[in-house]
Image 1 (cartoon, rainbow, N blue to C red):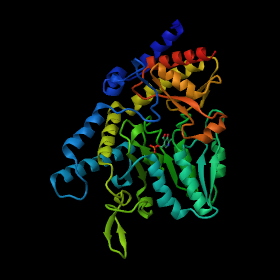
Image 2 (spheres, protein in one colour):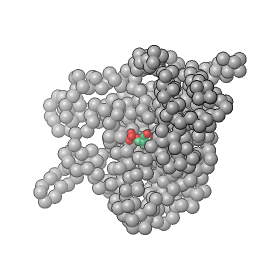
Image 3 (cartoon, rainbow, N blue to C red):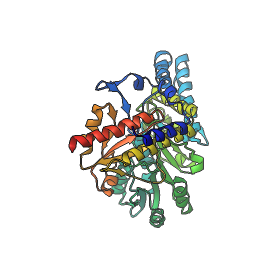
Image 4 (cartoon, rainbow, N blue to C red):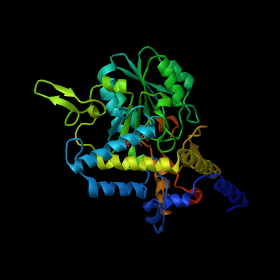
Length: 422
Ligand SMILES: Cc1ncc(COP(=O)(O)O)c(C=O)c1O
């Protein structure tokens, strides 16, 4: 280590408000897993982050002592499970700062939440010749459902372009809004580049023209404090496995008035008030949108994950991750031949890069030999890859449990990869 690097690293350590070693002790997978004989360096958090012991324990407690189907029973276990499930909804309400509990719908993931809005809202309001505004930064989850809707209705997608740093061209966005615009669907944080979009301003501009906004918050919720009332967005979709919770569970927030006017997306048990062969009347929100037995343990586990994040503190999480991102940007940016893809001024802790002309899959495979997990590929965001002229990138994404040592391990391993291909 050079003297300059040592002093930079010492500054960073002083700058972080988190006791990261204490936090890491909460994550058994980080303590116990070794890869190729080395400690795991887990830098694939944007794909799925790890669960702390508190979440694992809560799921085991539910499965061991509280398991029963919810809402339908008058017996002890059903009431216990119902209370835990509905308690998780209240936690999610606080996590997103939703005005009302009934504005919080449990889904199976972010994709499911977006599809719910596409079916329940989009199919009702979008017609031939109408337009839906997306951005060039979207994950496929926030492109494909809208494309399907456009095909069905004869509508079309309009796409907000980005500059070379990966920032949205806001003037272009404003120009795209017109009387045919029926919905704006934007990501809060880009999964491929890390760009944080100015969602509040985007929502305000759409609302000035009476257009509702859906926000894909899958990559924002792990890093930022989310306040749907402050953003004033109409829908906000998140996914559990990226916020230190289980897979198979997500949350869709929607403004009560909109949700009440929407068609249910799935039909079945629990989403009805009465059924005859002639007619079904639907349940009130949010239950209207939760057909069938939901992922109960997963919802309860997600509640525990949200409580864990809140206890760590969103401001501390953001400060630590920002310090990691800056350090990683400096170290990787200083390696000749490494191209950083996505250099927006406002970024979450996601670092996409290309090493010379080495294919990202080779980079990822070689990093794995040093125990380092990064994601390689198009990150389910092919349009943004095309915008930057690459088929794929290697992507390191940091969570609050990552360390400065891990950033250095990544940089050292990238240098090794280069030497191997030299
Ligand atoms: C920005 C963004 N939106 C949506 C998704 C989809 O999340 P899920 O697969 O949990 O539905 C992802 C997952 O990577 C994402 O990064």
